[in-house]
Image 1 (cartoon, helix red, strand yellow):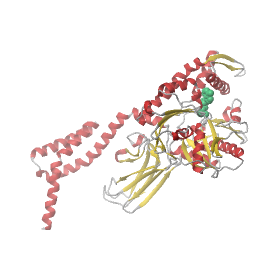
Image 2 (image 1 turned 120 degrees about the vertical axis):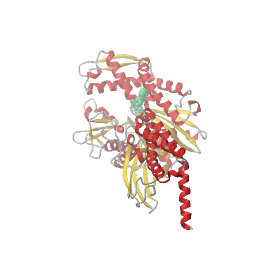
Image 3 (image 1 turned 45 degrees about the horizontal axis):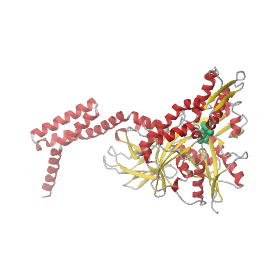
Image 4 (image 1 turned 90 degrees about the vertical axis):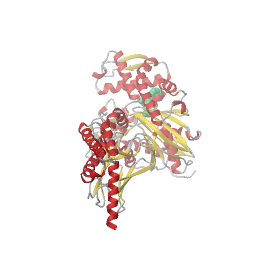
Length: 596
Ligand code: AMP
């Protein structure tokens, strides 16, 4: 079959994999040892040597300080976002992070180079393009940084694809009935997410996604290592790094073994040079340790279903992705929660890479065409008067998409408008993350008369372009927001969403107060002036009501209470209706008189 070679790559937190379409079939490519999964680990030697994958992990017990794992946690993020990491983090000049003097993109690019090498040696041809997957909740900066990592590895990234969408493709869900809904439960080594997708008109859409970037098989390894140490009378926390690594590796081995059989012995001879451990463990022991861990994933499931406005009974399939879904207790909990047996037809740790490969095949023309859609993980908007967040693209909007709104000037004679591009779920601009800040010049005009149209466009890679147009001159300002160097502050998405729920009442109260205050500040001087120049136009009782209402607004402003202020402003608005009408009438009469 003719067509262009494009690799499909799952660049995972714990493990990565690469595939390509060969003779019309999507397949994953194995390394020289026949393994299709490469650990996302990089070792940097003192003299600049680099080793990737299992070779890097093997260096860990002897050289834990020079082996980087889970670099995906740092990609596209800012210094201070992440509290702890396997090696010390330092701030980069652009506000980003460096580890062992390298940026997360550089470290990721070493993993990508290794995958590229594996593919090229299997396929015996050069590969220069790739589709790379990212979690559905990755923000702009994280997607752009992933793309840069690809470029550093000598790969043109033709598409950044959402992981749940890739998984759905691998499971062949595009062959389901129209309007079918599926849940993708992805529990890997270090992260968890649950996404709800819908197929409609032959197209996939991510309806909602929720996750926890600090929840995965690693947590269970730690719990099991602690448990094993405790049973052997050892205090895990008092051990040095290299002894901890030994116990964690053994814990992972025992955990995986217990997925296949009922019992396994935790064996760590001379793990700290002196002590040895030999602890028999059962699948029930592991099940007990895993229970609270699994419960945390189910909380995210509930939230995602609520976000998607759906129920478990409305789903047509549930698919499992990520190595940790091999654990029987996980499978059982998922089956119980969703009230159906999950589809186990694919390898859970290969599904995402396989889906990326299918998408690469479609883009390269070697597989049939299919359209894919993702959603925005967080709302995008701009700051408006009073420091409020004005959402242009709500959370969970299908991309690619665009949306716009017209804005005006707050002060007369202003010649430019400062546009703050925000991402987040909070009502006040200051509580959201600033993605960019720039000035849009426009023709000076009286207050409220300039017209600046702002449009947000998100392309199929999830990269945001902001266009601001002065409609008087037609002059455009276009800014592509793609780099962490532009002032991006990207905390974990679920934290933002959690905070927005936690502060929902306070936030709403502040928005109501701010909106009412802006209105009051406009209304009060206008009312004062109207009463002074035209108060005689309305009967005395109406005038008294206007004055009473104005006094109430002033008191409510001073009290700082949102709902009383809103009510007082409404009362004042209503009380001045007749006066406003009388003013308009008088102005018209005067205009007529002047013409006569
Ligand atoms: P992933 O990030 O999808 O590659 O998943 C990696 C995680 O899956 C690691 O925490 C592994 O320990 C875990 N894992 C892989 N195979 C098994 C298994 N058979 N039983 C339990 N956990 C597993």
